[in-house]
Image (cartoon, rainbow, N blue to C red):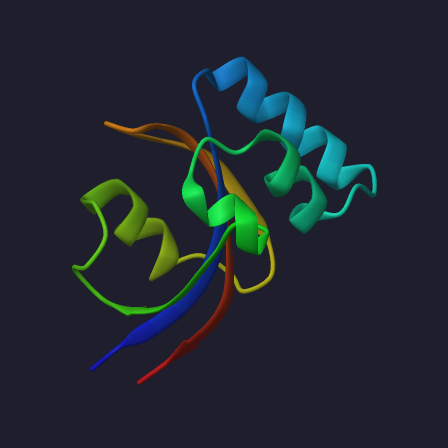
Length: 93
C-alpha cells in the first residue's frame, strides 16, 4: 500500500496561504510558520501529519500528497477546511 508523510499549514484565505508560501520561499522555516499561523492542531508539531495511506485524507489533499515532488511546498490547495500549503516529506510503497 502506498504511504506518505507530509506536513501542512492550514489557513482561511488563499491570500494568506500565498503570503506564507512566499515567506517560506524567502527562507522562513516551514515548521515555525506552521506553529505561528496554521489553524490545524498539527501546528504543535510544526504541521507534521505523520504517515498515512492513500485515501485517508480529503481528495484534494490526497491528490497533491501522492503526486507532488518531495520536499517542495505545494499550494494553495483548497479543501472544505480552508487553504493548505503542503510539503510531502516521504512516500513509499
